[in-house]
Image (cartoon, rainbow, N blue to C red; front, side):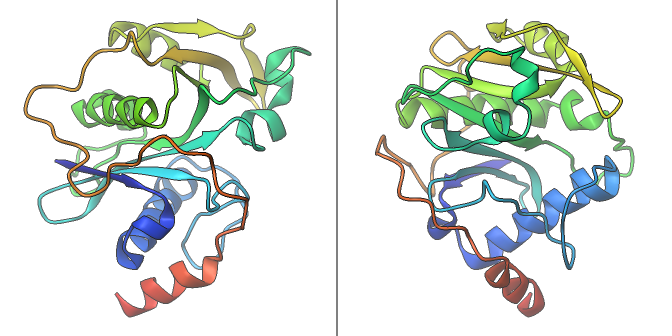
Length: 224
């Protein structure tokens, strides 16, 4: 397993297209999320120039996991789509807090995978560790995330230090909660993993928002 991180402009067109297709397969086809997608790719308004992607690949280059890091000084998923999870509190907005969203770790080359494998495999642990390490390089001290309530136990068992921002609540029939993950106190990346061989994002101010066109992803998919 290798992990590559960077903005869309720092990833190859082919890899970014794979990520978009993988997200569609995970969140729309497997988990049944009702998202506005087209032509088998999944992108939303939070996929833009300031977004950092963390992508896990197997030895053949297939995407087996992904995550998305967003600065909270710009609009992000919790602040814009799920503010009700904060029970009236203001969404985090700080240069040292980034959001982790669209996190998944499913290896579709393994026939035994189910929706539960999104968070049950060793891939998920390594990918989260790599995402946290990437966030630290960007200057983050905490990650904020929206997750199913079952993730809370998984995170604690993995040794991650988390803090609920409010009690869980049901959204469209699913129990969700918002939490902070401590970056500096999280488990180190496992020995032997070198997740930033291809791209090492450094701390920098996010670029102005320019929505990433789905056309480039569609073009790369058609050429693959």
